[in-house]
Length: 112
Length: 106
Image: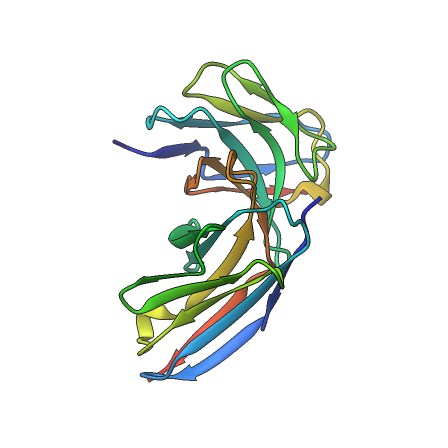
């Protein structure tokens, strides 16, 4: 099955700086890569996703890049704000279903 | 449009007791999923249903059963709860998650 590894496990950044989280996956058939944000005690919420036919996707301060040859993808958050503090999860699946294999998560803390 | 609705929000069971976690979605999605979330391990897929009438095992199915009652509803049953099943359980419909059920087994 798919194995997704996520790094780092914790990340502390100064408000206004950028944060980068990296994930690798093992199954070359995976072609859908979502990112979720989970605040304490809440459900995971989809913040951005990318499919294998594109290399980069951006939504305001959030961007995701995908390198299918190397089997890794990354989340970039620019101009971080205190409300960006949360646990972020990467995941991977095949396009025709949403059987997601998750990374272990990154706890992001934005220092004011 | 409520999205994905799970009940109950919290539950405490004694070892050996049984219970069913309920999940319903109103987005007309074909696929539904049950995950468990444990500290430091992300979310792991327990069972999924690609369409009404079909169910399949995920990564950690042992100790669980599921029923896809109709297109809207997908339930997860613990027949004989064990302390190792203490976890937060999330139901999902496509990429959308419910609010979770926090289960403690003593």
